[in-house]
Amino acid sequence: MYRAQSPPRKYEEYAYVLDFNPRGKSTTVRGRDGIIITSIGEDRLTLLEVLGVPNSNFEIGEKIYIGKEGRTKISSVLGKMEYDHISSSAQSELSNVVETIVTTNETKFVEYLNNSRPLTPRIHALELIPGIGKTYMKTMLEEREKKRFESYEDLQDRVGFKDPVKHISERIMDEISGESRMNLFVKK
Image 1 (cartoon, rainbow, N blue to C red):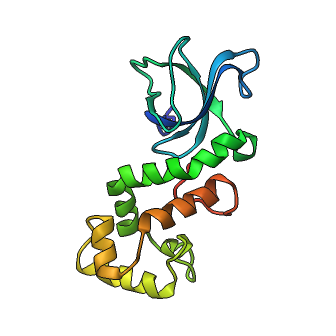
Image 2: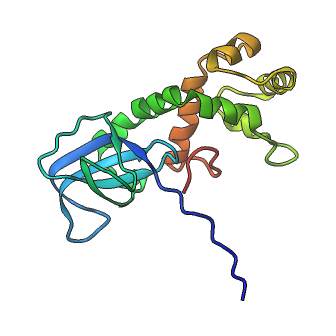
C-alpha cells in the first residue's frame, strides 16, 4: 500500500538568546530545570525554550547552535513558547534581536520581497509590511519585473523605500506578539 511521505519536519539550526535563568524551571516540560533559555529561532522565527548545558555561560543576543548534531552549549530544545508567556526582559530584547536577524539574513528577506505574491485579489503580501502602501507596492512590483532586488540598499535606491530592516522587523514583531491575523515570516 502506498503511503504519502509526510514532509520533513523543519528544525531550527540556530537561535538567539532573549533571556536565561541559570537556575530556572522549564515552563514547557514538567520537571526539567537548569539553565533555562528563552530564544528565538533564526529561520522560522519561533520563540523556543531551550536547556543549556550545566556551567555554560550565555549572553543576551548571543547566537547559539541548537541543531540536531553536535550541540556544545545546549542539551535540548524543550519546546515552543507563546509571546505572552516569555519574561518581560525577553519581550524587551525581542525587537533588537529580530532586527539583528533581519539584517544578518538579508538575502532571505530580499528574496521574499522578490517573490511575494498577492494573497487575495485585493491584498498583496507586500502591503502587509508596515510602510509599504499601494504606491510603494506598485513601484516595487514594476522594479522587480525589470530586475530582481539584490539587497536592501538596492531596494532603497530603486524604490525609495527607506529602512526596510525596520519595517520588516516591525511586521515580524506583530506576528510574534499575535497582533496580525496572517503570518508572512513567522512559522507556527
